[in-house]
Length: 128
Image (cartoon, rainbow, N blue to C red; front, top):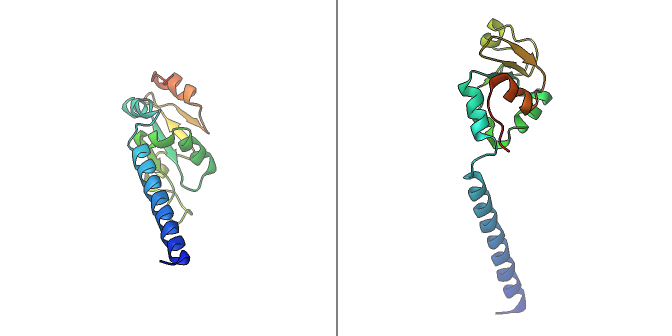
């Protein structure tokens, strides 16, 4: 084999090794529980509901504070898919701003809430 062919083969092996490494890293990383899984599950179990909109930067920040544990929240999307209207559920609930959290006692708080505030409102324990 000439030098050019060997370089192509070596480069291909390196690329394949990098791709395999990334696949292994991301698949093993995603199988780990999120730091706030139990906390987010508790919020949902205690009746906390997070109303938001996909286009809302504060909602994105609120979701990001939970990391991959966000999937355990009781989240209600209030925006229509085109981003120009509200869903009937949010109209019926009179949700006017995002994010809005509603708690089992009927109280509501709007804006990005700290995890400690959510713990305070629900009695759910934050992980250490």
